[in-house]
Length: 317
Image (cartoon, rainbow, N blue to C red; front, side, top):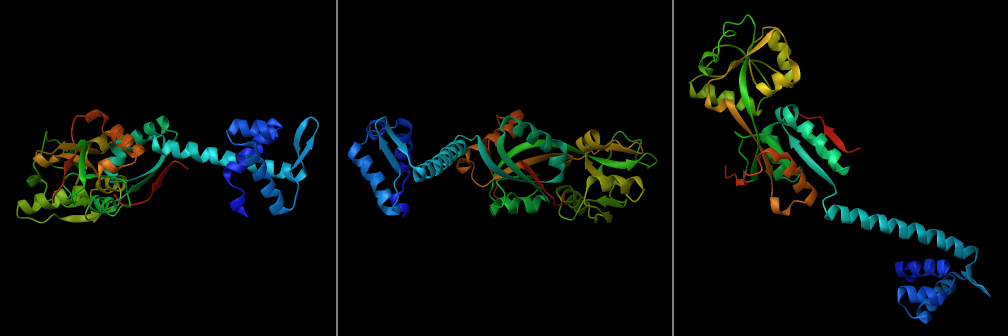
């Protein structure tokens, strides 16, 4: 039955009612009047109902015809909305972008940058998931995320990589700690103290473990926590020292009893990277977001690594 009621037939029927004439509807759609009439007759024969009543002033729909008219307008209206929506996807005005990022990136700048992007692109939705840097890379490689943002010291597994931003790692201690008054400190001066660390495998912990190993020592992790807020509280309780991004201390917390000490290590200036599977094949809307996130650093190219609208999915730091 539905083969007899195609979209063109619905368009023709609406045009007939609006023009009150088969001939005018045929002319409007550039189809022979006999072909238009035959399409309407086929529907009438199929359902054994009369759709149009002819009188001296033209044509008007019967009760069955009004029912067909109502549904035809709904169907054609939905089709128009679908075309507009699909065009929006093609033009990069609409879409869903899946992002997986580490806690540092989210707290430092990403959340604010996504807010600005969503204001500029009201038809875009973003799913933001927090995870550890190695897991972020896997999520992008396995196509569970479109964009990954993670620590630059983590193997990107052949993803296309783009510098996102840099942050500065500092030692975090209580005000009465022996190193609190120092203008700077080397990691070798910290390694003998107990550490408060983020979850095992996090980008910052990986840096610290490697630095300790380079000194021939093991990192003495006394407590692991799942958030920077918890890390601050545990350090404040004098259970150890920590390594944190200065941008997070400066921008989110400001605990009076804690102080930061600059870390005199080359790896203390840490790079956060954006990783995608294949930039050229990304949807237009995702490319728009990548461009937005790298706006402050637009001249830096991609490299290849060889080694209701904003949904935040709870994850790990």
